[in-house]
Image 1 (cartoon, rainbow, N blue to C red):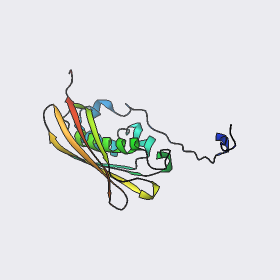
Image 2: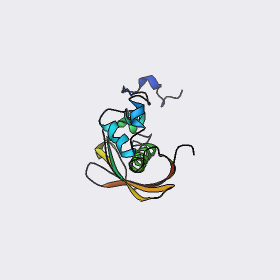
Image 3: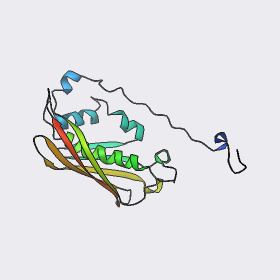
Image 4: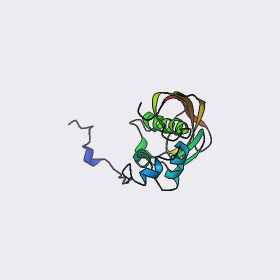
Length: 175
């Protein structure tokens, strides 16, 4: 070790503890009878657990209507990359959640979806000073087999910090 290096145990550290509900809990028989918007509302109402990624990243809100979803998360230091900004992967995950859940809100009973692609444009730096991050996802076009959605991420001051588009594949049981 050179004189300019410090052992890792000498750096100040912080910790974070979180918990999540194991996926697949709740009254699954009733949940599979719901359309996509109903499933998102079941998460909101506590009838179905939210996906663990929401706890992992610290999402604080999810609001859904058909074809539109809003998710929120305060920017935090545990989101940081080595250069002191929110990691692009965290931003991309928020955008993927917004776009994907917007498509989810359009699903008929029994339909499923998966993301085919996600194209992200990072427009400005995001730090803890950015405050509450709000992602709005909307469906641009919904077909029988595919859907195109977009998501916009704004900071606490309402400035656009990132944008994404996503194509999703719509599947039916047995496919």
